[in-house]
Length: 221
Image (cartoon, rainbow, N blue to C red; front, side, top):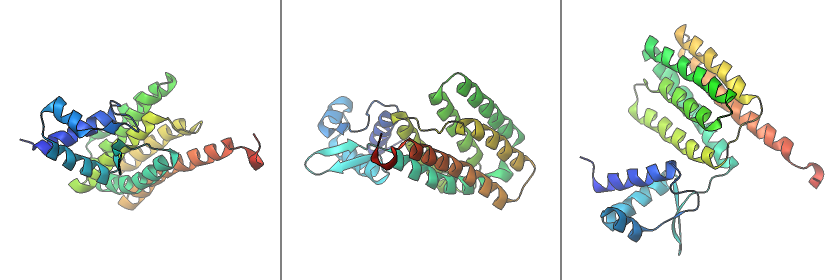
């Protein structure tokens, strides 16, 4: 049975992730106590844990606020995920079954359908599921948990604004197929890690270049 601190942590994290508590929302302990009948101590522990994980910012004389993310936070998060996710995928690859890989290909096909239907939210959710699956068989529970946590954080950032450079989504689908081909062929772990890492870093580069192109030149609109 989970502790009160764990229960309160999961309640807050789920509400942040599903948008109930959006960026800048103030988390009031007294109100949470009234809603759930969980005492204030577990809530305080949960807020400290959420702050450590980057979900909440505790501001003096204000209280705990759900963090407001920006493009820079998204880029930093995806750059980190490229490295830990690439490593986890390389460790996981030898243990992925034929069924796992078929599931991954199905997810990639559904991503293409979401793209055709102009459904960026669905595309993002399926993309996360795809990459979490490929990393899920790594024989390192802590690493897998880190990958999932970072994907969850990126999901919250993505809900605030969907950043994708034109054409990048289509390219990512082809890269997914290439990555699955490498895994199926039994490629060297270093090759798989590099491919998975570069896949995410290309997205960072594409979005960075796209945003730079949107900036006014020489200070003029």
